Every structure is written in structure tokens, then in C-alpha cells.
Length: 326
Ligand SMILES: Nc1nc2c(c(=O)[nH]1)N[C@H]1C(S)=C(S)[C@@H](COP(=O)(O)O)O[C@H]1N2
Ligand SMILES: [Mo]
Image (tube, rainbow, N blue to C red; front, side, top):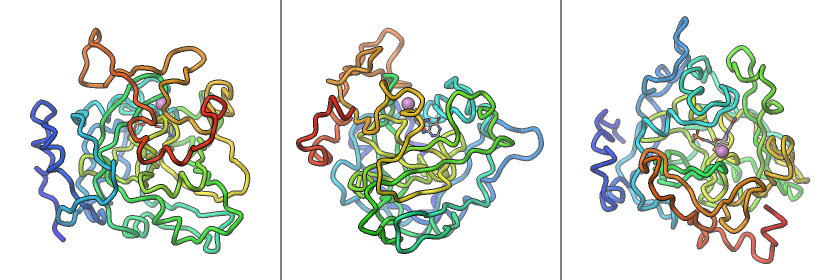
């Protein structure tokens, strides 16, 4: 094991990234040793989260065994990934979270495991960071609003945690509950959503090897606006399924409520698979705009079925009417 050099990703300037360069960046990651000090809240009035929070420690590079864990598209620049965010707890404008999320306190942090499991309990962040070897996964993220990014996440499969807490036979779904703290989150007073922000997955979706429990991006600890210190990433679903700053994971028998469903059920269903053939009631989902790459008048990209992960996840929905289960 060695600490990453601070220049680890500096060559990943978007214009220099070639598909083979992207492939060469396969890395396997481990425990975030350097993370703790840098990831805690900024002192005093400094509330913006513009400083890069610090490196994760890593193992020597190893190839991910999971098909589809890397896409060949050009990486979205770090600055775009971390300044164009949806994180309503910090405001509803894309530029709000980077300005206001400095007030999020990410240490100490615990994640509670509740419900239909044989081993409920509370995991400290440090224990979670060590639970399984970390990998870099280059995934597309597509927002339901019609934009997308390509992000080198760092994490490990959520399945690793699920296996350790031993779900009972009654566990059919998982619900993610995220932080709702008025003192730290200026958006909570706006009533834009019901808080806390909650999301959910069916058990087989949660167990799928592409579903990531995520602690970093670009080889660094997640900046607050990206969902520090731990978030879900579900690459074949619209971005909103990937809850940020998770504090609780509940294993339940009935399909759990999600925040967007509660807010506007006819527009945002439980499944929310990226599907170019199922339009949003107010706009088409057939194309997308790649953030940081395409100019305002650039041609949009066609959106891919299951965001390009059909070969890996299509089977999960065999026989389901995807217009009904949108
Ligand atoms: N807690 C919480 N998680 C959240 C959201 C949010 O508002 N609050 N927004 C979601 C939406 S709509 C998207 S598109 C992604 C955006 O992730 P990114 O800002 O890291 O790209 O986060 C999702 N997770
Ligand atoms: Mo989104």
C-alpha cells in the first residue's frame, strides 16, 4: 500500500484524456487515511467547498473485475463535477452547493443499519472506509433534467456492506436516509422537498455489482457538494436515485417512499431507470447534454438504454413494463 502522489490525477486534464488513457487509470483504492482532517468542516465563516478535500490512499493499480465498471467516454473535468450539482439541502440552483456546502460537517459520521437484518447497528465512517477494497469506477451519471457527466468515482460495491449485515428473508428493498441538519444545510428551510431526502432500491438492484457505495472522486475524498462523506451511485438510474450524505440504510419489506416520488409521483417513479423511450411528462428523455464538453449549441448525445449499462442490468427488469414502472 502506498499513498497516492498528489499529482495522481493532474494529468487527467480533459483535453489530454484519450480512451486508452482512461483505461490506464484503472485503480484499486483503499482506506482514506489522509481524509479525516481535510474533510471536516471549514472553520469560521468559510462555508464554500472550493478547496479540494485531499487524497484517498490507494493500493497499487488493479483492474476491476466488473464489466461496465469503466466507460470509455472522456472524463468530465473535476471543476464541472464539483460546481454543477443537485443537492437541494444546499439550495436548488446548480451553483448553490459549491458555495454553501462548506458548512456540512462530515466528521464524526456514522451510518445506521436498521430493519430486516440480522446484524443491525451503527457503522463509523472509518469502519466503513475499511470494510472493502476501494476501486475507481468511471461511470456516466445522467440527471433526469437531461444533462450528463462522466465521473471517476472511488468506492466499493454496496453489496459488500449488505452481505456483512445479513439481510433477513423479509428484506425486499433498501431505503437510504440522508442527513437533514438545519444548522448545516441552508436549503432545509426552503421546503423544496420533504426532508430528509430518501431514496430506495429493490434488493437485487442494491446487490448489483455496479451499485457503488462511494467515498471519493478523481482519487480524492468527496467534496461536500458531491455527497460527502458517503453516497450511493447507481449508474443505470437517473442521478436522483444516488442519495448523498447517507446516515441510515433501512432494510424493508415494502417498497419504500422516495423523496421525488413523494414530491411529484407522476413524474418520478420508484424505478427511475434511464430509458430514452420513456419521456418525462414535460420533456423528452431521448438525448442529453454532456456537462463541460459540449457548447451551448453543440449537438446533444442520444441517451442510451439504462444509461449504457443494459448488458449488465437489463436482466433485472426482464418481463417488466418499463413504461408502467418508470
Ligand atoms: N441528499 C441528496 N442527494 C441527492 C440529491 C439531493 O438533492 N439531495 N440530488 C440528486 C440528484 S437530482 C442528482 S442528479 C445527483 C447529482 O449528483 P452530483 O451533484 O454529484 O452530480 O444527486 C442526487 N442525490
Ligand atoms: Mo437529478
